[in-house]
Image (cartoon, rainbow, N blue to C red; front, side, top):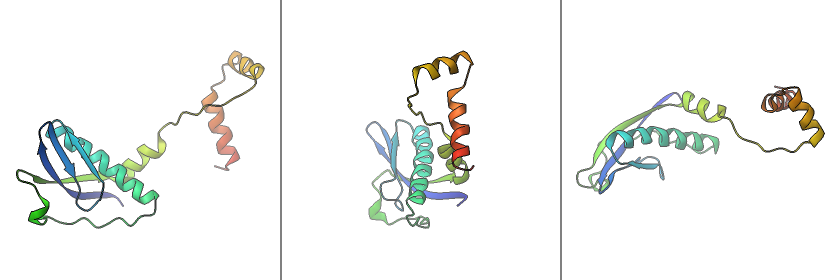
Length: 132
């Protein structure tokens, strides 16, 4: 999956806008301004599709508008939202994850004296252990 476009329904609310994707149950977001809502829509769409892919769920083909009239509230409108999934995947899967570990006090003292970068040592050791 490369560049993907789904159509979203944007609905005005008392405090801004809500947005949902008719093709993707549970993929919703909101914002105080239309710009914030659309930015949030790109993020939620990418995360939702990434999660579906990770869970081996079938990703539906995007439905082209117009949607059924009964699906849309008054003053709502349709917006295409596009994400580039390789970038989304890279951002999610390359992010740093904080881990807590325990080592003997004496080893910590010696490593700090030597200026050891604990994160780098752990990464190198894990890659070696996992044959990467």
